Image (cartoon, rainbow, N blue to C red; front, top):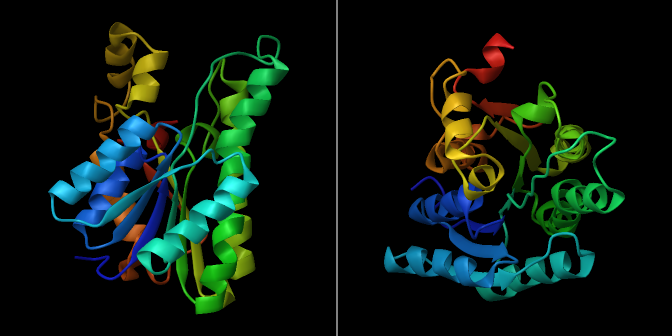
Length: 250
């Protein structure tokens, strides 16, 4: 129970990595505010946690809204009794070059992936600073943190921004007791990736990596538990690659 008596706000908790993190945090003893725009699947995450004996609530959250981010933080504090961990898991993906990507798509990907990470962090930080302790965990990507890939200019740019936002906040708040780190997943078997590629493309893609398979959301959740826990008490500004060896050979 590495997170006993901790309280966590998890965005993107309705599916994929965010859902796996919410479930694992609860299994490790944390009370969890599961936040997402997908009410149905977000509430199913909460019910899954409660069925296993955990404590969780749901909050409808569009991370691109500063007001909603502030209200999510306040609701977490009011209903669960505090806030120690923020996991910024909300994210979207779209393909296209700079020529092909519309301004609307560019702005939406930035609003969710980068600005959403900023706004939720901004809403959490004053409380964490006041209590002298907190852990913010962002989701970057091997694509954007380590290298780029073709035909995903908006996504790559957004995740590159998350990478340096993580480091900037880590430097700014280290002496205030707040640690800020990022997980950099390699291609992971999530609904987002399955919606973007065909099963044949996914299978071929997975075979290009040293471990020869996609990551599982539960494997990313294990990394998040480490960064959230006191085991990582001297870790801040770090980019933790969980990628099956992908970036080791790029």
